[in-house]
Length: 58
Image (cartoon, rainbow, N blue to C red):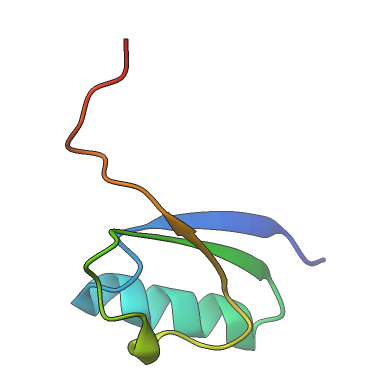
């Protein structure tokens, strides 16, 4: 069964591996990255979203 999964920090070392593995398993991956991240390392099938979790929301 395919699931939609959010990976925060998807362009980091662990995030890249996790994102690639989830896409390979057939899941729909939402890859959360910063605007300054190198997104070329992510699978084309990943749905990209840009955000910075270091800023708090109120």
